[in-house]
Length: 284
Ligand SMILES: O=C(O)CCC(=O)C(=O)O
Image (tube, rainbow, N blue to C red; front, side, top):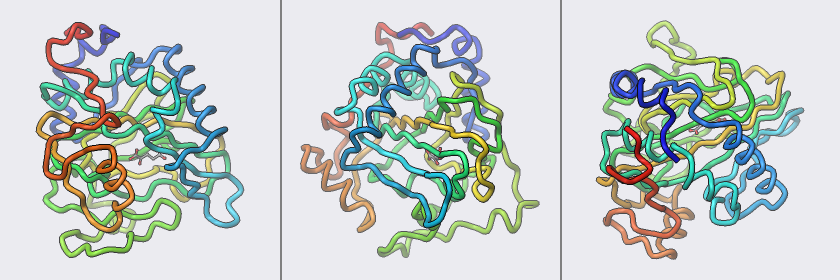
């Protein structure tokens, strides 16, 4: 599918914001057909949870918080979304890449009343990949800034990689993390940071670097409405597979079993390259 003209018109500005801030909001990228397709995919996925389904609801929470990743090969709606939406092209363009390879599809559902959400984190240490990568996050229902994600402006340029944490209890995973820093106390020192967040309608998306620190804006305030969301993460052609540690053992073994070679560029059926510079779908 060709990119919407709005994105083509805004692409230079969007790329500048993405590079400077580590995140950019793009409006009206996903058509209502694509949003409905994604909703049908989430419903199918919830009805038949796969190996990478995770319920992150804390005990006693009146609303659930859950997600599933790497579902696209079992969920035809997600396969269609990945191959027919402009997401791959947008990711590739904003990363300044020659190609965009899907590294993960990952839906989330946060029900009304859910007492938890994503902690402050960046995505990079959850993944066995090194290279340029970004996440295209989009809500399937309109979401206020408080119901969506909040970003620490410019944090993709910070030198540290932070300890990855569990999304239920917000504690770091087990494993040798000597090379990883503690996530700073962002809420306790809010005056020291600049934050970016947006009210987003279904169809809009937030594109962010895998190093940009972000979290659920309303992490500790129960949501009034159920909001489903999708994260599609992409890698540029310079990305290689490097198993990170014991906390990614299950995912790295899964990729190895599917034929991905350690230290090599991404080459595995689970990780399709969905866009290349000059591919016919490109309209920019
Ligand atoms: O939407 C959410 O609840 C969390 C999304 C997120 O943190 C991510 O995709 O990295």
